[in-house]
Length: 267
Image 1 (cartoon, rainbow, N blue to C red):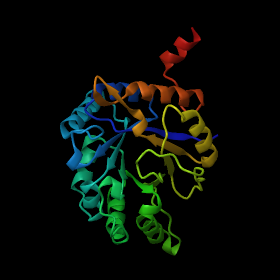
Image 2: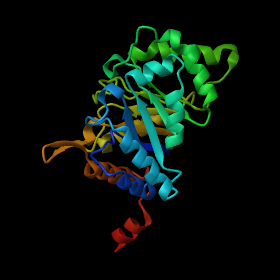
Image 3: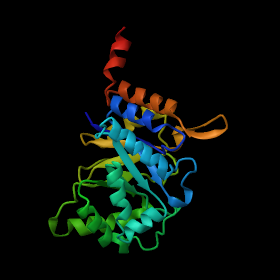
């Protein structure tokens, strides 16, 4: 039976109260909220403001919710900075309480992809320096120079990939398009996640397919576009859609329901 490491809901922004996320995280510990960071789009739908992130961080601290899963999804200049070896924002993310950092090194995410292979040494240094953080790389045809470069660097001389390096398989490059073929199988060589076109409408099928692809290896899934709704004319991060997904994951036996919901269902 595969283990679902995390259920990723990306795009949490100013349209949702930070306290709601903290309450959900306490009830569903496997849920991970992803926050997109791209300075030129900050404050627009999907891209939280710095003030909102600080409110979320304070909300976590106020209820001692230190185990809340938070993933920073870096885009645009935030990725370019990291690939140059600039760690200032990485340090800020740690202070805010983020546990994972996803590097979306693709053109559609506003990143200069012309020198990804050259960025390998700087990224290796960062992964080594910040061992308490898990670094996630989008794995697709566009990021091959970076992913293959990291693999070559670490596996030369029969070394292993660092334990805080993971790969998210997303051929859509963050655009929310499902894969044309099948989800790639996990090998155990590195932690793997799946993304691309996942949402409330197809979550049951996706869970069957990704569970089969992962086999006995732990995995996670991540979604973003499918969690948006227009409410009162505003593009919002829709917690109702998150609940639909969470219920399906619980039904599949890959996540536990909160105790009070178990009792309610029995009654």
